[in-house]
Length: 604
Image (cartoon, rainbow, N blue to C red):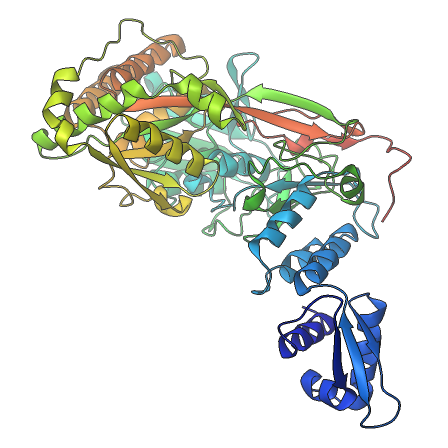
């Protein structure tokens, strides 16, 4: 906060309660004492506040004479106006810090959030000839350690900061080279040799070698980067850096899905010694230059082996208050701002903007916690959850809640096949427990979870089921000890380019909420299916069929209940070109470039 802002706060606090426009009788001596400065400094400060339009001060003639002071704005109005001015000048950080004052109400911060989200056509950084992509996010960014990324937000950003050995081409339906330009499979599928690109550099300038890949694989297989990838790599017995750009992975038995697993964001390559997910260093098209709870900044990696991105920087402002606000700001406000992309239509976009959308590949879902040593508890819980699932109308949920909820989901993936033979009949079990009808639901904060959970709670109550909701931070929600007592967990389940690998991850990883909630019978079923069929199957189509049988079982026993899929959107001015979605419904920053800007664009 500036000296002028603090001076105004002191004056308002001293003369509280104040009324805007009402004259206050005072003296320069009193004002000097309130401001805690010299007489000369107080006069200069009062003059500057008058020039800002905050006050009207009429000094008395001569020492000891009374002066008049009129407050022309409330403190919150002044803060709001100043924040808008700072943001319009490109000083977003200062604007947001100004709003963190404890005397500023949440409504002012929400108003500022909508102001940012309203969009504009500015693209260059203040005082620089740089193309900067700017937009607003609705939730803070968690760790960007690839091995810990669970949500779509972090998985998307990991793909911008890091690279994998291989990538899955969804259009061609096959695995293609990336950091590894080629590979061989030997010993009947028990040894894989990867031949790595030369000349690749990490963001800190270090050269990428097989030692980095070996470090990454050992870190993942050993669980030092969280447990998401550990189980998928459990058949690895040795990782060998054969030469500086040749790596060997030795398995104790064939793992035909290994190449698919290595396309997952969690398998992104990190440099030797990497441990800090808040300061990630990768080989990807962008490098992280700033990250806190309010802002994330990425800069183009000039030495990127796949070609330097066209934009110079990506600025993301994290303002949870704008999510589903449904408030449209005026075009006058929009024209003053430097936002040039809306990942979600938080407010009415300018009419000349272009809109794109896609349907999410994954879904929002409820997971039933059926893991308990007491079979009677599991039986009662299953019956109650089955009753709840039977009354939840997904389509009505989508229609009533709106927002980016797009279509009802009846499978985990958008390409999933629903088995029409699945049936559920728990009426008799329900009748036996209806007098003890209560459930607990765990959900993360934000991202529409509060509205989803409240809708579910209300629907359940109408059927005689009491649902108590516990909200957790997303970092806490995904911890292994977070939800042992919850009956249900509300989750989002992203699906990446390689659908098979994504499903195998959520079915098999001990970090997956689904895996943690399996009942004893389902755990045994999956273990046998995975060990005896899935990992031994060389045919990708047949492996996908095995995963489908697992999904069918989860749906049949109502261990999972898909709710809906999102409509992912992007709105942007016409000069922002080549906007495309990635697998997670986010815009891929590396492909965006800026054309000729409209006449009404103002250079900063």
